[in-house]
Image (tube, rainbow, N blue to C red; front, side, top):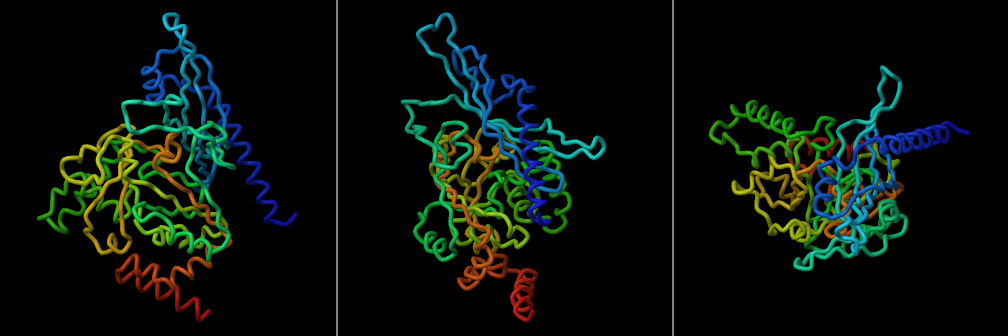
Length: 387
């Protein structure tokens, strides 16, 4: 067995161990006390006593850090005064982090985990939004685990076929590329171990304090504008970047060579359906009237339109989703209403795609048009050719 095979086997054994760890942990949690689940329980007329788990996933996010996602159902029986009723079933998902504790030399699950839940087969006849829980697509772990509809999925092993397919995608959709297919659709603040409203406020206030002297006339910024500036300059926020161009999103899925051994993916979002799902208008402008969304904890994820305040936003054709919780959007049991497709990109074609995108004018210098990035782009292209 060569060294690569040995490493792969060790990683597989570790992931299997972590899945078992999550399963054991799941049966120790009082799920009926979690906000999302307790809220769903309160909306029904059942007594819940049957808990079932399935579909545990784990994936590495950093050295000594894994993320996990599990799915479960909480089945209820009818109350005595509602005997003809068969009882409800609440489907839920939870996600969090597993960290290696060097002091105790063991893996430990963080108490800071996120839960999303809803009553299965929910339907409101007075609402235009109907959730059709059709059969899951093949090879979808979430669909198999929960028996619910999930976004469509295609896999591409040819760079030419993928580029051709992107030209046929809907023009009004939004797109986001992930260098590693297993990464969840969550904002940068949610990836912090101590994600909370207090952390968001601390980052925002410190950013404002440190930048006031640069342009005193523009301060105070306001919560919304400050969040967009923080996002633009790399600080974690509850915003997540999307693009109206699938080619731009594809660039972000393949541009990092350090991920070339992992499959990537391209997500397609229907922003109008997302806002309709949460009973909000679209497009939703980011102005002073909705700044409370930046300090709200709820179930909402909304498509937000921000005016282009920087050339980079224009070149990347930027749009944003604003998240009022720290869970992954793709873990939502009803996400197929607005997440229309997930395109899997084989790791074998990443280098070829970078070359093709460059020939199409999609590279670092065009998407990040400043002197530092133009210089880096020239270095990457010319020095690679010389070598």
